[in-house]
Length: 118
Length: 175
Image 1 (cartoon, rainbow over the protein chains, first blue to last red):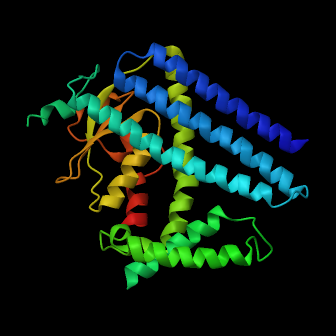
Image 2 (cartoon, chains in turn yellow, green):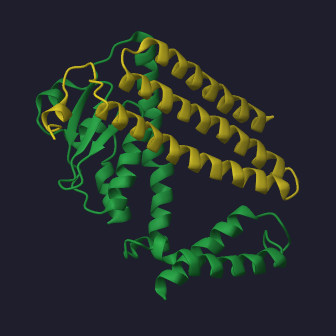
Image 3 (cartoon, rainbow over the protein chains, first blue to last red):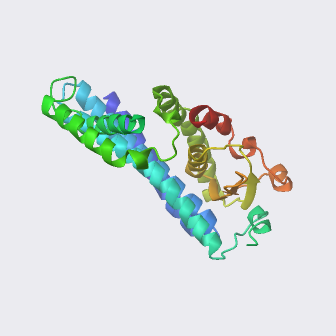
């Protein structure tokens, strides 16, 4: 069945992204680069897991399911929007707090250190 | 009066979104619609001063919400997928050049800055560390700073996003 293939592809991409996110936490050198792997790759994984749910809901509803599937799909969509917003804001808050606490990033340039002399 | 009406309509639409699938009038039942109107009026009266605290009614136009939806499932999603593949490869190979760069998108409103900072943070490989409120300069931590961008004092939008000019999209939506 076609819908099942789409669902499996979505879930496989989501799990792969989450696994790579965990690998990134272990491999990257400092807090900022780890935040990249931790928050972004896992957000991407969650987006595709949610898309898998939405594909399942659509296939069930179009096959003659009742209105409960719409509720499930809409709530998943709302969870997805909330996840995307809060994850981005959380990552920004952690990195800003880390910088203010004096953790210097490893790397080639640091333009923020030129102005932060308050 | 206008802030109250805008907040009430917004609360009513949010209530409808949460209760879809409850009945036969399109997707809703009559009791839910009546409850939604009452809750919308109460919420509008109570929280209009907070919800419209900027006094800026630009986002009340439905066209801007359509544009925001198109933006998030079009350019933003394509950028996120491209950057995710890039970061996934960098996780495996360990080939990174991290650094914090300066970037001035030239946005003036708070909502525009919020949307762009969120877009940057949601795209893997770039992370907004600090935003200067007076000058509007973004300090962006990048996982892979290109040679040209590392040399320059101020990076361009094309150094941060690969395919689309995101500040122009945000300006169209929020300013």
